[in-house]
Length: 218
Image (cartoon, rainbow, N blue to C red):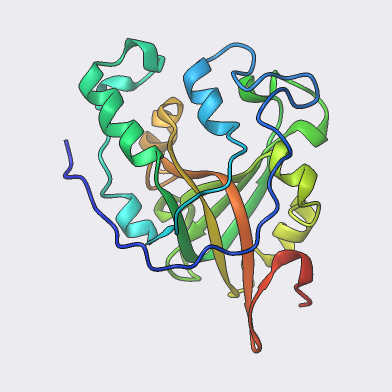
């Protein structure tokens, strides 16, 4: 198992808008429907960080601990040691200063109760430490329906307009380990199973400094 990385928290918390509750969203409970209830609950977090997020790079995300035996298994079947190693990292809010290289609206997922409504779908963002990052070297960060409902500018159209623009973005959110996607690693479709999921803030760099995505004018 890879060595745990400890990050120094040096970023001041930004003014952020969070979901009004952590219960059901559009009739879907936090645990979702099907799949891994513990993983779905991590994806559906609605809480803002109470501590300053730690700066992190995609390269550092790739060095975080993994659970090779987790492929195809729900978290309830992991060893206590593996659960503790992952959960200790998932309690850490982080901030990535990266480049958005792809933005893909997803379809029905168990975390969103397999809803067919686009309002209930995640948006997958591929981000890298440099603007020429390819998908196989990128990390995935995710905008979830709960957070987009109170931050409507975080829609697929706005995010796709930023993708490939070479404009730095600052992504704040919760670390999360998505053990369901070992196949994407094998296919070289992503660099790491670690994600920022859910995203709790999106800022864009301008000549005047960092601005919230809602206030960004290309």
